[in-house]
Length: 206
Image (cartoon, rainbow, N blue to C red; front, side, top):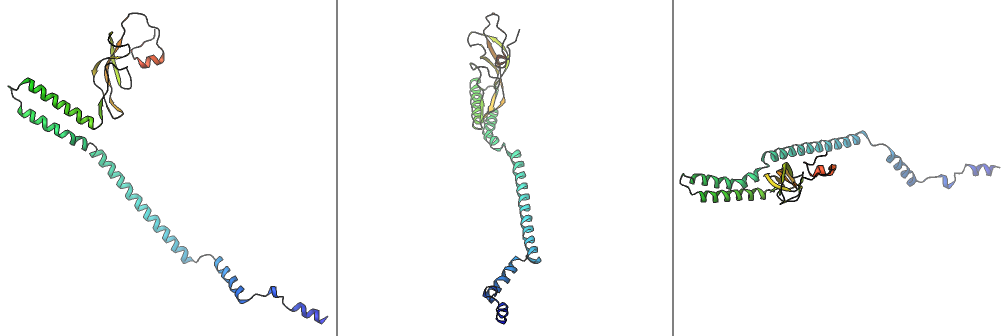
């Protein structure tokens, strides 16, 4: 009976911990502890500094974009104006050489040269004239001022240009004023459909 009690008081090998195991347990407990107040403050200071730097960079970027936009609006036509300066120089030379005895043929030739130089310069900037006579009437490019009876062009075709139109690259600056050809047959035409009315602004229903 005494031997049994003695055996019960002896600790089992599995229940005992060596010094190495005890140190590992203490290390795990230390790692699970929350960071100290100083570490949180340092982290906060770092994040706050990063935020302030980003805010300053964004403000500088915004100001730079506004300055570039203002400069573009103010000096956007600089290249176009520079390309027109030679034409102004030629106009001044032609004006200084004019007199009452100037040859009309020479004046006409000078005018043609200046006109061609102007159109070539504007064309280099993307300006182009809208085609009119002989082209099908297109309300996107043409503005009809009336009808013109003619057998030279098919019906609903531009027969006469009243005022030229221009476009800058793909954008219409001013539609061309035109007269639209009509057959003039005098035959009664059926009531036009909605699509015909859009294509021919002079088509009227009964």
